[in-house]
Image (cartoon, rainbow, N blue to C red; front, top):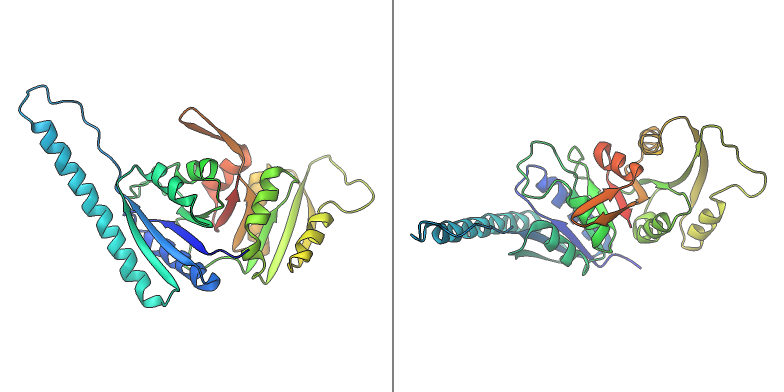
Length: 278
């Protein structure tokens, strides 16, 4: 099933325009509707103890400022996307905190595009936005590195496979991208000291399933003396992959998102876009 609606999160950071360009290219390739979402954020203040109404006045001024900034982000999105000849697009301004806003709108999209956190950036998005959207939206999340180019990914794809529920969900969610790829590499990492058993090579069953969807993939079982997260990033660099597809591991605990080690490593050190599903 192709992507018919793609959501891209907007912010005031310097890397927003390249992220929009990437999402727009994907929308053009998949003939999809593109939504640019600019959450305003919210302001909370304690009551003014002086009784002079200064708190209420400041609160309204802050709300107005946030709406104006979100409106500017939406206008920049429209100006950037309008000349591209997409099937359709729209910019939304949502008076809500960024993470809940993106999560809610992501549930009505086939794919959501967010940016990797860039330390020291002017982005209005919380640093853990990718994690929150991954864990709570129920949709595939394409995380774009802050150092990435604007080109749409998916020509050479590396699929991380460990037979888990999360990995199966990610591969299924990535089918529209895998079907357009020039090369798809499935990798299963073999921890130091482990040996393959005789018989059908692990991962061959996934390759067969992909073939039924018209996707030709090669499968490699790679011994590694290092942790899986860094092994995955290293293998992607060796292959010249421009997209990694993997399951996102973790759980939500109260207001904290607790990630698995591989997911955390990739989100921190990624240099190419990563499609994750949970």
